[in-house]
Amino acid sequence: MNNQHIMRTFDEELRFLTNQIGSMGGHAERMVEQAVAALVGADLGLARKVVEDDVFLDEKEREIGEKAVIIIARRQPMAADLREIVGAIRISGDLERIGDLGKNIAKRAVAITEARQPTRLFRGLSALSDLALTQLKEVLDAYASRSAEKIGFVRDRDEEIDAMYTSLFRELLAYMMEDPRNITACTHLIFCAKNIERIGDHATNIAETVHHIITGTQLPSERPKEDSSHRVVAPSGDDPES
Image 1 (cartoon, helix red, strand yellow):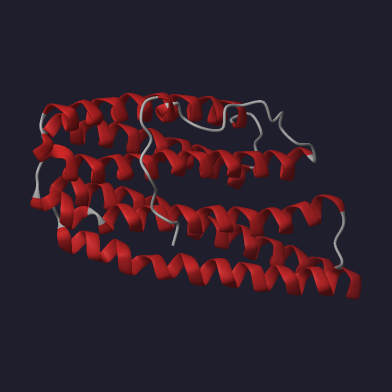
Image 2: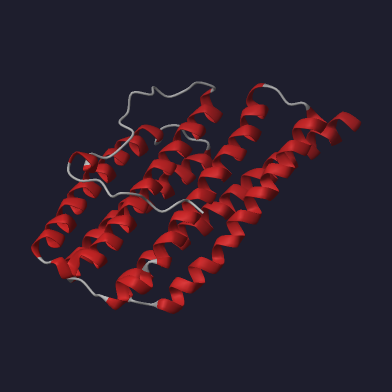
């Protein structure tokens, strides 16, 4: 009976980690969605909300890390159970970074609002965001269902995100060259687009972690790791994930 109680408690602890990841994932998705909406719609109130909401992910990541350390010390798990716990730590880190990127996009809403740009440029940014958020949703669904079938598709979608970002980068660069008055606003939009592209990278990292949790093996590492915008003219720097 005592062993059954121990196993039941351990299962509850693992479910706690899974539920916390689910909570973080939903929150990160909303932050990115709202950040882009604030940017496109010039909604500064919504932008401020996104910035304030980032503290939730910081707290959840810390809570998951502390809980995982306690579980490892108390249970000394092995094999699949250890992968679950370490995987939760890694995924929570990626989700916290995604929240930071959403916050960075929201912070640029003020500058973008002061110098509005053609609507079609915002459509491109929205399309890029939709693709990245779809990728994130798919990988979180794969984690929740412990299904490895979608993982390959998630990595393929990352290449689509890279290609779309490169195309948008070139379009924004053309506007900057066409009229110097566009330089400031288009530079902000480039950084926003880059942050969205990086969200896709973090979603791909999560996909690789989920695959390892489920199978115990690593996915092949030959996938492209970056977009090709650096072959044109890369920005001099990028937002820190903070």
